[in-house]
Amino acid sequence: MNDQILIDVKNLSKAFDDVSVLENVDLQIRKGEVVAIIGPSGCGKSTFIRTLNQLEKVTGGNILLDGEDITSKSADINQIRRRVGMVFQHFNLFPHLTILQNLTLAPVKLKIMSQKEAQDKASQLLKRVGLYDKKDSYPDSLSGGQKQRIAIARALVMNPEVMLFDEPTSALDPEMVGEVLSLMKELADEGMTMVVVTHEMRFAREVADRVLFFDEKGIKEQGTPEEIFETPKSDRLKEFLSRVL
Image (cartoon, rainbow, N blue to C red):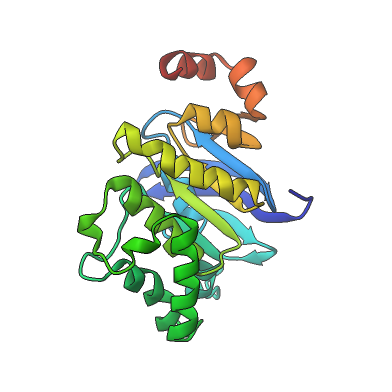
């Protein structure tokens, strides 16, 4: 991790019709930093992370990615999403395509790579996630943990500057959670900038550089894992941790 600010969120607000979900959120994320977001259901965590690649348009405020305002009307949304990988709770793999085809579709269609370049990169990543032998299989033949590892590889094939994870293990059976978290930990160890919405408190405690506690439309408390889990300041965070730990 270095001192370069990769993501700079300024006074961000988001509302759905008349319902305010996020208000006046400010946050800076440095290159190579792993930020875990925890908090109760319905507090805006997933909405927030989806604004970081503009899957959700902001109502107010700005988000700068390496100095570029991605909330500007002139911003190239496709260019932004090449730079910001996203892994969802549900894997969103194309069921009619093989695993290799799932990985190569975007880089070829967006003319980032030739078919051969994309296949070489995808093969390399499938070996990395331990699923090269599944390259000609279809998603329905895979376990949940394998599908999520494929989804991570699919995001990595675009060579993103930052990876966003929206509760990546919450749809998995408990015995499959470990294999996905282990891969995410490897990415963190290699210096990938990551923002992770998670219910896995052990991951937040062991892997994150910083933990954000979201509640009631924004960040209520943030700090190192030690500060958040060992010496929480607010009664609301103490109450939350008493329920999940």
